[in-house]
Amino acid sequence: MGNKVEICGVDTSKIPVLSTEEKNELFLKIKNGDDKARDIFINGNLRLVLSVIKRFYGRGENLDDLFQVGCIGLIKAMDNFDLEQNVQFSTYAVPMIIGEIRRYLRDNNPIRVSRSVRDLAYKALSVKDRMMKENQKEVTIEEIAKELGVNKEEVVFSLDAIQEPISLQEPVYGDGTENLYIMDQVSDTKNTDEIWTENITILEAMKKLNEKEKMIVNKRFFEGRTQIEVAEEIGISQAQVSRLEKSAIGHIRRIYK
Image (cartoon, rainbow, N blue to C red):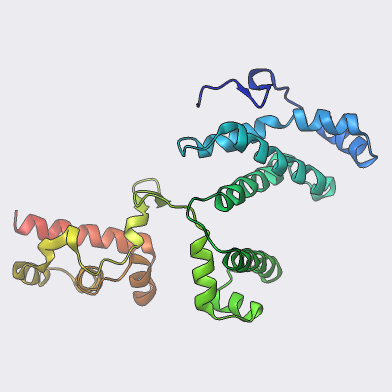
C-alpha cells in the first residue's frame, strides 16, 4: 500500500510542485474567480495530501478514500486561506487536511458513537479552540462545560468517545534522551505488571530511597496514581516524575539483585 503510485487515478509520481511565487499568483486569480487557476493550484498541492495520509498507513484504511477526504481538506484550506496572514500555505493547510481525515475516521469508526455524543464533542472542541485564541492559554474541562452549559463529566465522556484507539506504547513526550508513553499515564490499580512491589521486601528497600523517590513509588505503585497526577501533586514535571520513578525502581532492583 505504501508503494502505491496511482491514487484515485492520479499518478502521484508526476504531481507538479509550485513555488511560493506561483502559489501567490494563482491565489490572486482564484480570488477573482478563475476556475483554471483553482484547478492548477489544487493539483500543485496534492503532495501535501500525500504527506498527510502517510501518517495513517497501516490502519487498514483504503488509500483512495483517505486521499479523497484529504483533498476535501485541501480545498477547504484553499478557500479559507488569507495571503495577508503572512504564513506559508502548507503551514495552514496541513492541520486542516489532518482534521478532515480524522473526522472521517471517527465518523466511520466501527465502534459506533451516538450523534448527540459526537455533536457535543465537536462543540467542545470548537469552544476550546475559540477560548484558546481569545485567552491565549490552555482551557480546562470545567471552563468548556460552563460555556456549553453541561456537566464536565459529559464533556469528558464525549471527547473520550471520539478518540481513535491507540497503542499503550505510543510516545507522548520525548526530551531527546528518553520517551514517556501512554502506559505511563494510565492508573495501575492492580499492579499486575509490577507484582514484585507487593512483596514485603520492597517496603524495606524503600527505606533506602530519598524522600521524593519514596513518595513517587508509593503514589505510583501503591496508590495507583498516574505520572501526571503525581507531578501535579508534588509540583514537578511529568518527565521528572518518570526519571525519579525509574531511578527508584533501578535502586530497589540493584539491592535485591
